[in-house]
Amino acid sequence: MKVGVIGTGYVGLVVGACLAETGNDVICADIVENKIARLNRGEVPIYEPGLEPLIERNVTAERLSFTTDVRHTVRASDILFIAVGTPPGEDGSADLQHVLAVARSIGEAMQGEKIVITKSTVPVGTAELVRKEILAHTDCMVHVCSNPEFLKEGAAVDDFMKPDRVVLGVDSEFAAETLRELYAPFVRSGAQILTMDVPAAEITKYAANAMLATRISFMNAIAQLCEKAGASVDAVRRGIGTDGRIGSSFLFPGIGYGGSCFPKDVKALVRTMREVGADASILEAVEAVNERQKRLLLEGLTTRLGEDLSGRTIAVWGLAFKPNTDDMREAPSLVTIEGLLERGARVVAHDPVAMDEARGHFGDRIEYVASDYAAIEGADALVIHTEWLPYRRPDFERVKKGLKAPIIFDGRNLYDPERMAVLGFEYHSVGRRPVGEAS
Ligand SMILES: NC(=O)c1ccc[n+]([C@@H]2O[C@H](COP(=O)([O-])OP(=O)(O)OC[C@H]3O[C@@H](n4cnc5c(N)ncnc54)[C@H](O)[C@@H]3O)[C@@H](O)[C@H]2O)c1
Image (cartoon, rainbow, N blue to C red; front, side):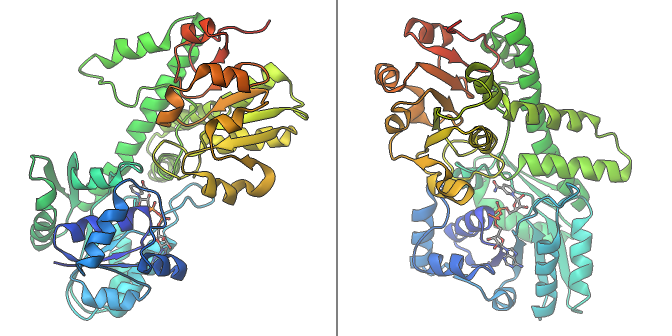
């Protein structure tokens, strides 16, 4: 099939490469010239495991190409995915300007029948706006469908290749058949293709992310109770996660959800629900808990070391909002580090892949070091934001020797508190009583 993907970011690039891998001819278009130039030089602008060889293989096989020419992409493709960003507007609603700009470009360029699919996460009713925008510029037949994307950054290629399910919101049997055929290679091991009406597909994406965010905030609220009551949150997590009705995923307490999706999608869903008069209070609470959680490390540090942190050095392990990605959008590390800088601290940070990204946020206001152990040399405390694998089993003797005082604030509960106490650390984690406190 001839496929065009408009918007070559995290989602567009992965979708384009994976669809090329199954034999389709795919053109990925973007308006950012530098991004397309880099891709055409064989550079992959994002860190995503497995993506680089996939792109290389399909470019070499001439099934995948990159361009800034959206008009050509529209004309050369039968199926067009819109995969541009939908950032939060000032009021929290999804900003649809990029989606509608692409719809206009499609309408202006198309010369024959097309299937247009919103891959971007968009509020219910957007497909109809896209249809209107396209039809304002053409008389050609257009099918507008919704095919929300559930991939996770850090495992995006795997998620797309082996989805739990594919959700297709369709407006015609022709579109349904074509998209089922397009996705058939990805569901051979039994995953379902769920065909539904377009508004249901649009809502499904937000409902999925809001449910996952709710589980995280729920567990963080329970973690607060555990900490105050002196109970082990790990035991409680296992106690509920083994209930078949609940399941164990997304129940780890921590310093809150971040990234490019959960925060903006929960906000946008709250906005949509308010607009239509639905009760959004459950999601408002989810957001409030998350905001509090993101400040946890900073509050812990200032409670321990004082509000004035001038003359203090804080080592930071982990900048990305989660492991296996360099994405720092809405990362809890941004909140901690800005707070530390405001209070005069010197911050020395390490992350296996997100340090370039961090430079965009902090410039030279913080120091970046190439190894995790270099970060802790002479620091007054170590703060952990991201559960990267190498941070899970460090050489604790080396960590202790490097730090001025053996104080760790762990936002991801990587270590066993009892063991940390035995090792001589003062260890603060989430939903568990601190151990080894100095006073
Ligand atoms: N990142 C994720 O993990 C993820 C997962 C599922 C769904 N989504 C959704 O997918 C959409 C895209 O997310 P992303 O993370 O890939 O965003 P991104 O910001 O990484 O990429 C968007 C791309 O669209 C390009 N673009 C903007 N306007 C354009 C135009 N008029 N024509 C051509 N290109 C244009 C931008 O230059 C950018 O490269 C969002 O709606 C997001 O919510 C993201």
